[in-house]
Image 1 (cartoon, rainbow, N blue to C red):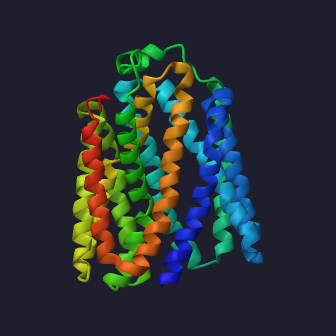
Image 2: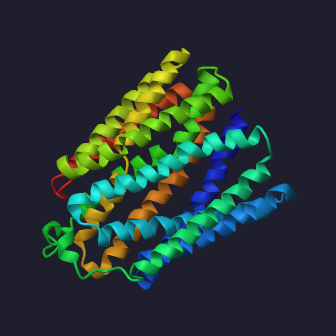
Length: 364
């Protein structure tokens, strides 16, 4: 069981490695092709990588499998930048939280429905059918993006830049950039994204190894927890727009810290279920927070260099998704599930403290 946990962590790491390797080039792509053109490019790469996985998996060629996972990560990196750039340059600040959380909710719906569909398909067919279906769905997404892009401008429209709230958010940019505060913010974001990246590794392991529940039942419970994610996405966006980004992050990760402390006592299945539901509530309240904060803070630079800041923001985010799964995967095999829960709860509170340290400087 421990080996399969580590294998899953390594597979996820290959995808994240593809994202990290591609991140430095995404700024050029959105500047050259705009958010809509970049979106189409990302979906094309994702479709090709999924089709490659469909062809390669039956062959059991590890090197080709790794390359396909890296290619998938590359497409995901370009997709992430296209949506970050769209939100930073096209969405007014007063509704940016809700826009970001809406995108986050759409992804959460996919993550909620996906495991259910996979379970149903596996009860009838093999894994090959899953990858073929994923490929067909990616083609549908690509076609829809092509139709939409014909109705919208190919280039990002920056003529309305002052309407985005950027003039009000140019924090001492005429004097100096707040490097100390930026570093603190980057560290907080690194921790937050890292904690999120290990959710699908840690939570199932706790259910199977600590609560001693059946794998199928654990999958069902995690899916139910994901429903909380979806339901809380809009309240998260409303909270960000009305009360501030810092409030949403603080509430979200304080609840996540409580969830992990509850999960330390998950030898009783009822407590495991309670911990999962609390986690879903906290995670849902954090929907779209990092995209929104990144878009807001990118405004401290000139409008021509927003893409450069977003590249830094995304690169650090993707770096955390490589470091955390491997580190937590190794630590889980050595320390066990209970101690890892305590570590993640402590990191969650640390992120809250760091965000509140720079909240005033960045109008969060």
